[in-house]
Amino acid sequence: MQTLQTLEPQRAESHSEFSLSATSHVQSLILFPFTTISLEPTTIIPTMPTVAQILAPYEYKPEQVERVSQRTVQPPITIVEPNPEWPQRFSEVKARIQKVLGGMVLDIAHSGSTSVPGLPAKDIIDVDLTIKDATDEAFYVKPLEDAGFRFILREPLWHQHRFFVENWPGAYHVNLHVWGPDSPEATRHRIFRDWLLKTPSDLELYAKVKREAAEQAAIAGDSMMDYTLRKDETIHEILARAFRDLGYIE
Figure 1: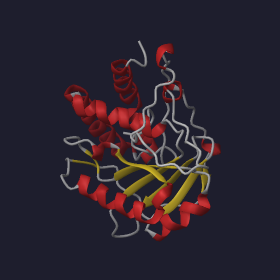
Figure 2 (figure 1 turned 45 degrees about the vertical axis):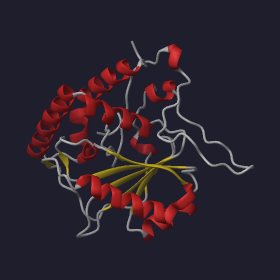
Figure 3 (figure 1 turned 90 degrees about the vertical axis):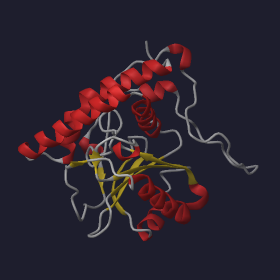
Figure 4 (figure 1 turned 180 degrees about the vertical axis):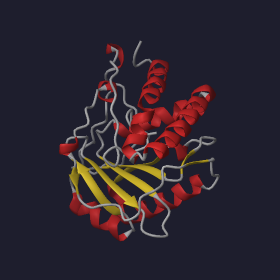
């Protein structure tokens, strides 16, 4: 599941876009997973995404992607049955990130299809890491690299997105997305996930579309981005239902 275009983060390597309109009465609603932050006297309270930002369209422009390195191992576009070990694998990744980044971390969330019990998925753990300042690479890039993650790309114009993977030979595949506190992407991922958790019909629909997209991608020799694009229409439809349920659109 990626953001509306790839709620399963991968679009240049990872991406999403969507085009829904916000309703005026919910423009300032805050939707982040943490409710309290311990502040020093000089600490600046981070900005949270508004509903307008959550619903804002995004146009992917490959020329704005700054490639840092390449994957050493390409994960297969293969859908597997739900694995009860996925939550534990995420917990292990989360603990490693918390250990090396400490107080800069605002939230670490399991996203993507492996975060939804009962949903078939690519055997990859997707992680949304929200930190105080995604532009401060000097603070977090080397610690993450030392923890086993490979820095793949940055997208300064897409909510200061940074993308890391853990895919050295023998490692379990992990996609790690780094966001600043005002990015709506992690919130969109959470909305999508939570909607699937409570809506069996859409979970079944999304599972069907994922399998079909993977089969078509295998026949066509598609890239991961092509696979993601095959799911876009369905992701838009499901997110629209989730947004209506929350009162964000009519």
